[in-house]
Figure 1 (cartoon, rainbow, N blue to C red):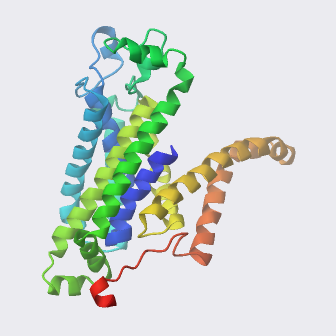
Figure 2: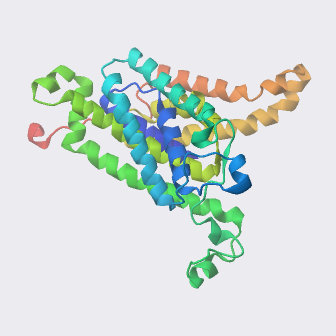
Figure 3: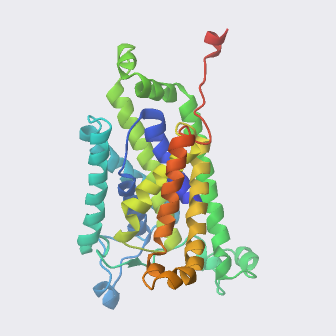
Length: 334
């Protein structure tokens, strides 16, 4: 989960950190990626199962095809959204993008024919999961099944951790190289002084759309990885609190405009978020001594701690743990 949120933070950094897009619609691209990959990789239910699980389609494709499809679907949505929305600035852009995220979530909630509506979409395949079962993978080489035979299904999370870390590393290298290229320098120019960039012949609108789409693609990939990790998803998994505002805290902590900071901030905040779940559980007996109603409110302690963390960041470290790297051309330096 830390790797998945690091991907979301990396995608947001491409949009906000380098171009200044105040995107509060992260949940929309996260959800599109998750449901698209699920529909592409799942097999359409038949017979009695079709009465309980409705899907627009089920293509039964491999895992990587689902991830690519999630990226393409997120890119298409971002392109459709970017043309009218990116004309707005700051607070209006934030309002528009969070509205789009809510529209996407409510569509998946109410349109049951699309992805089972309010009911969970179950049975999303996990890549390589059969290797950890006693019978092994049908059609796989005998040596491969024998290699994983001593392991059980509880060990599968290690393989999926490796998959997510590899994808995170590949996307980090790609984005880091892109941001260090002339393309990345133009994005920062558009962010810092749009009029000057336009006067120097740069197509500002085109660059804004590119940045928005690239960030959305990364968020869609994170959604695909989330779907295959959970194996069961529904619309409630993509609430703005979990899939948007928590990601903003991660980027603000790590450092806007720094890809390494975005990733590290994702891991740190997710670690705090996970750790406070145990803290809230441990505090329930003490809270019960004060009032019978307080133990039921213990989960809100997590949000309180995240809010305090956000306040500390804004007051004492607004640039984040890692500052944006200011690069000067070697010709100017000479």
